[in-house]
Image (tube, rainbow, N blue to C red; front, side):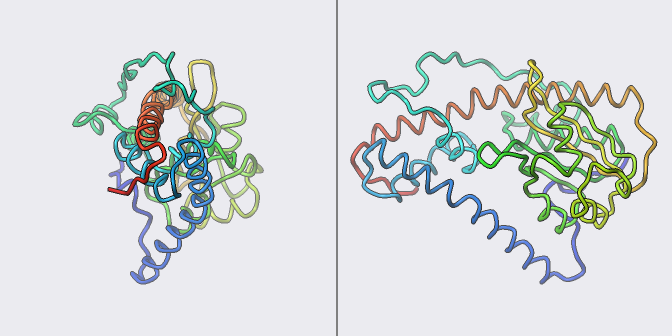
Length: 291
């Protein structure tokens, strides 16, 4: 099997300064995309808890994000999309039943999440690692639905170039194999990237430039068959297909990961919102500052 590189590291270029500039540009783009959403969440919290300024609202978001190890982007998406709590209730979700996390039994999860309570990032890394092990390739990525813009947002990646990561930071609902797999909630194999009609031409060029000649996308699904994420593997050679044992293993992986993500969204993310509501209630009408 192929050694697995650092999940967050794109393929380095020969020029360290170019790598630095690309990283800085990537971070600037991410901040520019997240800023309007953060501002919207700040406005919601200011109004809801009579906070004196946006800085106080951001401080509460930051504390809730850190307390429950939830990414800021995911937290503000939830604030914007979730119906507001009853102002008379100390709880945002008073009827909620908190369930334990479903087990993760695939080998990479047992290895990568055994030390601490699994968080979303560690679980997604394990899902990617296991997928690449099944298909024997070092290149791949994991995406989650973008609940505000639609489409899929890149969350984890390994073995891919910086240009690939930039290009596919967000994908829409057409033009890629992962978009097709999400739409059909089914595994999609691309035997030959160069000729497969699933790709639009810009996506095809970006994938070929990264050294990928074939790809396989696996939806992460709930028990009711809803796609809540996507893992894709890229191979440096054309393929005729994969064995039934491989696709069955990936289907089981996708179902297990999807059930865990469903639990996470209904438990950890809601815990963070509940904590945020408690902070807002406590600071009602007063200033809060970042820690």
